[in-house]
Image (cartoon, rainbow, N blue to C red; front, side, top):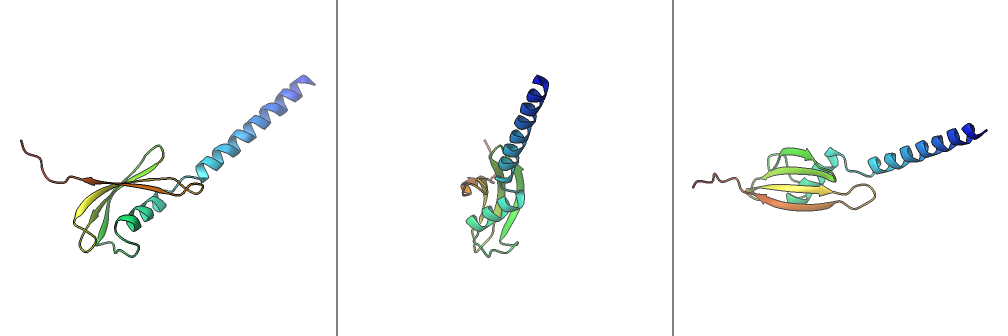
Length: 105
């Protein structure tokens, strides 16, 4: 009877760990959601594709980094937007300007 108890305990641990990992995965933003949050926060909710151009998207440990080029009227610059959070936590946005000028010594 001892092997049955151990087998049941092992199954319970397996099921609970899978449930927890499923909740953690469900709580993260998708790449599409990260792009939507980044665009709406730096260019405005109704910005067109020609005004707010997504240059790249890179996953990080806690979300995504979205690089956006803004054109007038939204701006005239390139921004790196870190999007963190998800379903269980409000998305957190951190915007950093990216220097696109060529550096010369």
